Length: 205
Image (cartoon, rainbow, N blue to C red; front, side, top):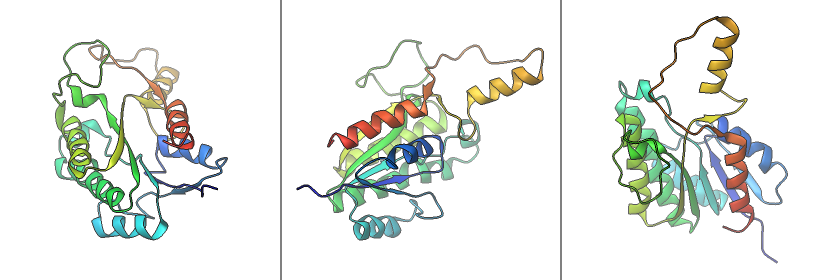
């Protein structure tokens, strides 16, 4: 009889991590939810030790520096969280023969064109955020770990802050609002994305 999987979810207090908590509660497998207070993923030794001691089989990395505008003024921190820390998780996955599921972004493609993206389209990262997220993807590839990278966009949910909640608040407060009109995106409900990840994990990867 196959033993239970141990699944580590990082960034568990964010939108996607919070949705994963809901699903993990009904799984026969064991989900371990951490945020920076429980596990600092920017600390390579801490990550390696945690994954080994807990016997982690799957890592779902929901942690990220997602403030696109602030990243332009704080590239070192964005690089640390979006790239360096991802490398730590990837190497820990290799060490424990675990699978890493990493959440990335459509910003790795750049801003040209408003057509749907495919996985093999050319990469031309948009700004610091896109560049650091691409560096994270590259760190995974260089590690050689078993991995699945999911590029998503415009997450929204009832948890945390997001574009949808901002628009709902502004429309309830003001008669007129000014919003950019030169961006095209595909809003993604965090609950749907969490369910897709959960189905992959529970299906045995």
